[in-house]
Length: 119
Image 1: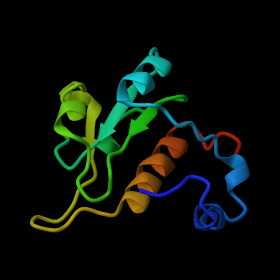
Image 2: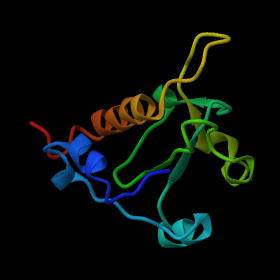
Image 3: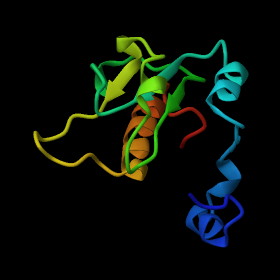
Image 4: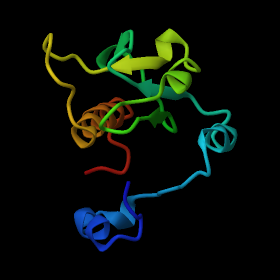
């Protein structure tokens, strides 16, 4: 892990950190309670639905696991199969890194909702 106060983290955000709304939760249960009522999707290599087949909406929540091992099974299993989404990859290839995976899915979701607040 890393510290969220780490100067490298702030540097990585460059001029964009002002647009981010970061929330830190005590644990998975606290996260679920806080976000209850919102549609949630788990991003996993074990997903059954392709991210491009989804109809995303404003305020959807995307749950990613650690880059090194992905979402723990107990969290994945809390999502219905239709809520477990994946990115297509070549057979026998390593998964994309977390940053790229998040960017791909979030940009597609933003595109689907009409690039709200974009130029």
